[in-house]
Length: 303
Image (cartoon, rainbow, N blue to C red; front, side):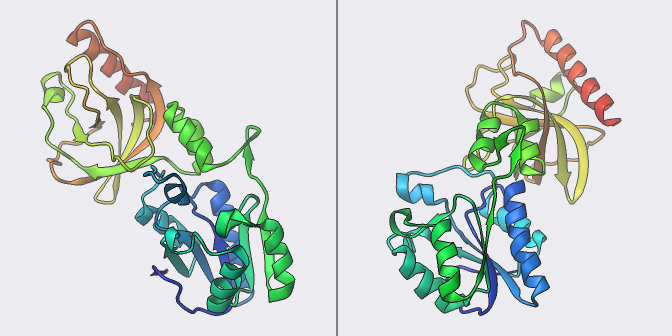
């Protein structure tokens, strides 16, 4: 997939429009439609998206995303997109909808197909919408595909709902909507080495500040290191039984693993909530509970 940070002329494209935070199952369906149309008609496919969420521009505040931009683009590439145009939203925020469509999309791409979600908006003050895209398809000779809402358990799949599930610690529901496991990645830091003193060696990571928050607790996990997957459990929180700190740390106990990981990059996938983080009355009671957590997750995964 070729990635551009400006509008570069590429004619006769099948285009998917959206921010695509998380590249969840509805996004996957939308992007796949643009890819399938392109392949069927011997065209190239493209995604037009943004470096940061448009909400940052409108709210003048940083927003947290489900995926980093780099990871989002990897997932989009895996669906089969040929070109990704990753634009600075502020550069187009004040362009009227028709002007943006004619002088940017049509001028640069001569689209043969455009695919959006049912609630897509564009242009200054969000005056462009699916109704306008349908109308313009006759004027500019392209096929327009509106992707209907994707629902699971009677709720419309959206990045907002996924973030709510994460905040509530409902990781299984979030993963179902994502169509994959929610994960974070960072380098392993040197912690207080308390885990090994109670018999459970852990790798410590700082939870990335730019990624959507997930509720503190103990989770079943999968860890990717050097391209290989390992099973384990993680605790996200402040370790109230062994420290008085309010510093939030992700610590993961990787099963059957004993390598030195300091400074190494780990991908930690949250698979299932096991329990809440809590303060135990003694270290022995904490150790007993950790053993139970590990036994539960090993048995569930035959690990």
